[in-house]
Image (tube, rainbow, N blue to C red; front, side, top):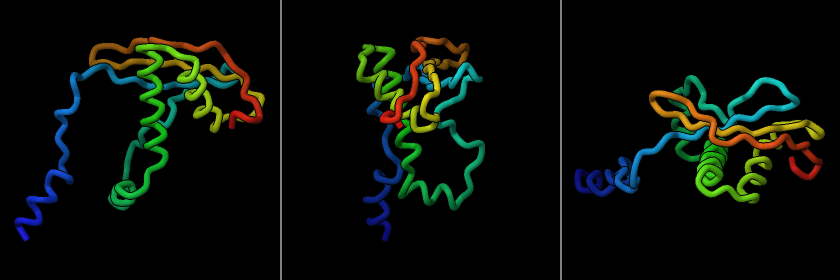
Length: 129
């Protein structure tokens, strides 16, 4: 039994050595029709034990949030129209058709928050959602 646990331990507790460096964490915010800025896929303030267990097997919302963060990093490092279009496509799923939407990227460090990208407003089309 102990040998089996030793084999499973690296899978249960991953090594974080694959990070080259720790950099500011990007946050994606969106604004619809000049309303307040909203965080895209914010972390819930509290997660129950059952929710944690279920998230081990299925957490599509979190995966979509991770994809948005990778798009934000890409827009910050090497902006491309494709990355911006994909970010708008993700956000369009939460907006009504015809809404005017803007996207803002904020990089958070311990000391400050810095806006690194703000898009021009776009109108959500029927095919975007």
